[in-house]
Image (cartoon, rainbow over all chains, first blue to last red; front, top):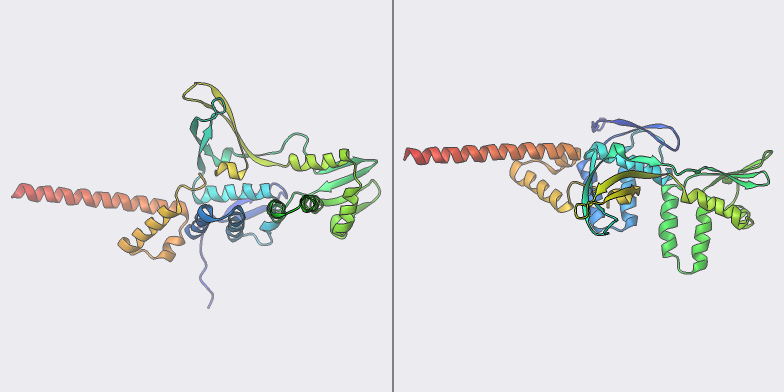
Length: 243
Length: 65
């Protein structure tokens, strides 16, 4: 006898990194409860892991690997799922910058939160002498590893090694006008050796790729009720939207 | 805020729905959060209506005496 199917409304969303359209359902009260529990008692790692499990359950399209999605994509996806599950509006309390203490309530519609790609951001890094790198965005798994393992690492050498590991994990392809090498065909040792021979200028370009990665952003202006001064407010990243 | 509610609130509402209105936990947990909020609001309206009717009936009885 076939098991009963849970019928829930489904929605479509176009992923920004791949352009692929996926189907998802809103999360349920039991999934919201799990998120609430980790939000109150869990560490950042627990919150992210639960978030991942909830998203996995909500994505109906087969073959979407949540842990391999870029972190900004995951934030965008969660924002959409949250909108369909609870409501399209998020109530925030923003601190006015002019006095640094007055908090002003701000109501943000989730549809107004856009993915901001900073100027000059590119996945292709020209290293000079005809050599280029094609980068890929860090997945949630890599994001977790680099964030939590780096903070857990003891010595500074371990931290440097982990930072290098995070960089080589994001290399997709190395190519010249005539030849190309896929990172997936190379060992970590080979990639590390390649990265270590880059000069500071070339490495700076790789750093710029990470610094200018796309992020969720909402810009607005609020007036401080105490001073009547207008303040520009920029809210970035999932953590800030839901702080 | 990420959520419109807290875990304490969620537990309290779930308990009230189960204890006083005989909902099952699996039914409650299978709802979409906004759906549950709507049902709870309807229930509150219904309870308020019942309370008013009871009060009116009480006043009517008092006037009869």
